[in-house]
Image 1: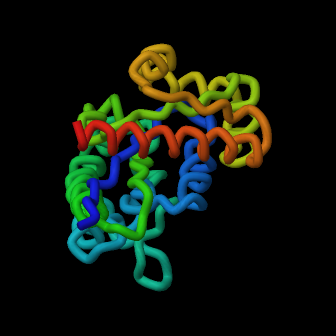
Image 2: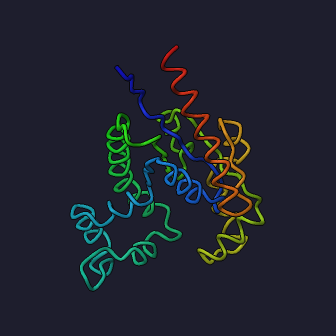
Length: 211
């Protein structure tokens, strides 16, 4: 009888603009399932209980014409307001973490996938790395990361620096990682590295299960 080994959980680490989503997409192309915490947060933001709470806090202006939560309006409410941001996080994060755990448990024994990729921002800052079997650090030079966030988010160097101050130093994340992907070139180069890393992760995970 074939022995089925639980799918490993691969946590992604890296700096802002390093391209963790690109690496997650490369893993997905190779048969992995991605648990995207940002997507889970967007979904949680527009659930009925959250929507009602936001209106109670900040009024109907946080809703768009269609009655759904206007994310830009919510962002304006918490911008430079740490207490408001903490209230929002306390409302959203437990829902995200519960759904993240549910999805990981669901995919652990799914034979049709290769591994589970945990794409959760601030994985180590939130002390969630223990939920992962393996950690992969996504590396890119700061100049390139700045170019990416300027293009995608309109941030300048000062904004990137401000945001990075709220995160663990990148050398600490690299030190904690089991593997590193150089994401300073094109996606083909990234895919080649991810393919090699995934093969090794699966091989080592199965060896551990059999020992």
